[in-house]
Image (cartoon, rainbow over the protein chains, first blue to last red):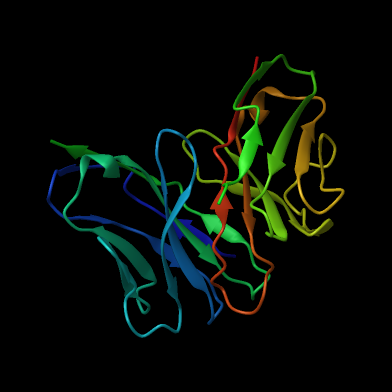
Length: 115
Length: 117
């Protein structure tokens, strides 16, 4: 069975500093995709970044990067130069089970950025 | 480009009543998803449509939940009768038609927050 684990219910970071949000996953599939979403208090889920299991390079999108360690089955999100607007819930998700597999989400981490 | 639209944004009902949610996906998106997000948890897929056909409804409680997407565009999700444990945010998402590969970005609506008293 596929599973996503996010062990940090809440995190605090000072504005302009970097922060790492942890995510570990479990799957017996060799091919899969990993996603990070941001959910502000308004409720919508915003896609941030994607990493394929066969991608050799860690994904990067602006201030977001994904620290992908396949052997450890971890896909941590790194946010550089935190901004007040980064305060939100962050969800790690996985798609496995072939191209028809659906997204399985973790329980999320609440990030609070302090001025 | 307009995003995924959902209505209502909030709904309060008493247990055993019925309720319906509406979703209009992004134009041209063939795939539509309904998720249930209980407080403190990540979203859980309820049902996935490809055009007007059901791809996956394995986690939909079919004794009380139903969903349809008759013309392959907008969709409604219904709960009848509602239970206390149905209190959650119901998120609708859409994406382009599924093809090979795992990258298929889903665009989410703002959700409907349901409270069952």
